[in-house]
Image 1 (cartoon, rainbow, N blue to C red):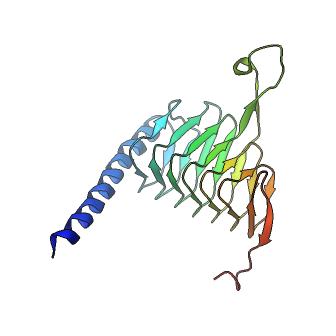
Image 2 (cartoon, rainbow, N blue to C red):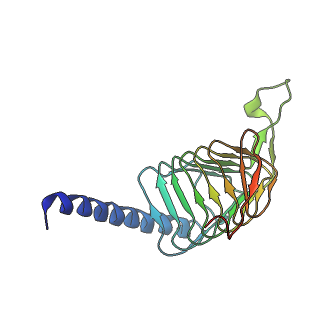
Image 3 (cartoon, helix red, strand yellow):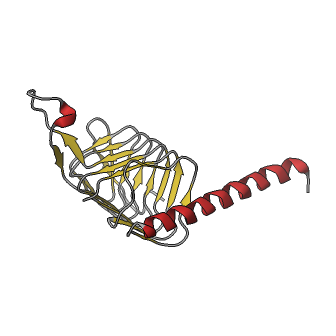
Length: 195
């Protein structure tokens, strides 16, 4: 085998083993802290827990966290990720109440899921105001493009696609393509036409 083919293959294999080893360590940490985590967790460099993992963490099998993921899951919140969920990188998951993601869903770079925002009373600093929270739910086989913001109380139904740079709040119907600021329905995804 030529060296120009061998080096990239070796590099890919080393990165895969490194992310699997890091996944074993993070899985152990989550379980040690009372959460649940299935086998095959892959974690690239730079995962950051703003608060320690806890019993609200329920992560399925073969979940993949890309580079520089931030998990800010409050002590009373739940983070439920079903099997084969993939976060590409530079993602933020922040929850006061909860985030649930169904199996086979994928999230592009820079996607942010936040289930809460601060109060807007002008009588005190915003950081000291109570959080207004509503859980986020993403169903099975959802594709979320890069740099998307998913806000509190959002439900994205199965097989939906969210276009890049969208801001999503409310409900997205199943098999629907949405995009924009705020996200609006672009079209229904027809199985026979979109193959």
